Image (cartoon, rainbow, N blue to C red; front, side, top):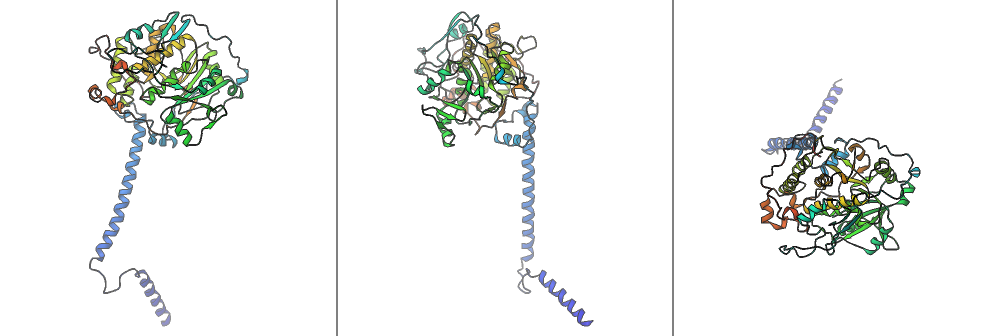
Length: 490
């Protein structure tokens, strides 16, 4: 019994000795040893607390970012950047509300669609020709031709009066840039049905369309317009192939190089193939434009049947999700720094002075503001005229083409007819992909006109002429209509 007690005491001492193995030997304990233990434990706790607080701060910031993108409060929604990598990440995680989509009432079988013969007849404009040589004003310091030309206020005003025989500015001024390779020019001569897209300054990569029928693959030319920067980016990523004729391809897309970009601003360069599709591809009878960051998921032949032939339309574009008035759209552009605020105001003052009223239910149009990323059109003379005048406004004023669309339609009146289809269908046409990087231009941050006058480097040198050419009327007394936000900013 006594032996058992001694054995248990011995085991207990051994266990206690094991637990104290890391303690310094007796008699050699430093005088600051307890303080070291306190500091060590305190430091670990401090790191843990800071880490937890940092994670909470990130979570709060992300939640605030989501809220700012969904709220209808002007001050908060102005902070949202839907092109940012943060927003894209949140979107991929399912934390951002998706756009409203609805089924498109398209036909079931592309092979059964009957393509109209002969095209739509032109009742107003019979012959449309284009100004090809630039007339540089004597007092103009810029001596070289501009891609869009030096359009005078008088020429602009006359262009809004449709008549049988017209000659208007429509880009592609000789010596103004945007030259095309001979092999590309030859290739598009055979293209009567076109799906067009564009990428500039390497902000996107081509996305291959899906759900395309064999008939559409044979019928349509899929043409992707790019600049040298974007083409180089595609080659570096190993996606470009070349055929025996020297044509470049990325999957189904035939790459169409636009050499010597005509503008300083990539977004303004992107308007060339988007709006002037009939100039780039003059043999085309029908075209569908889709922005470069989009993946088309609807057969293009079904789109032509749905948006043009079924309702006997010649021009179709979606309604904007949020805005119907160009002044509300301009307000959203200013809040989101899409262009210089004072230049947007000046742009809108010119339109308001020229009679463009805010949209109301009394107007004949469903909306004055489109979602311009998808355009379906037949290349009739009146549609080509509209496209030329729309581009001229983009050339003269801001590159925000949604601000100009409704104004040009207003000026042409009943001569131009447009089918604006529901926004929910628009969201069902494509899958949206993020840009490869965020876009920013110094002019977007300009808050006062004096900044542009004092620092000419902030100004675009080849676009926005109408914002700096003296307007033939006093705009100082023009007060823009009050904008009441009726929905979330787009």
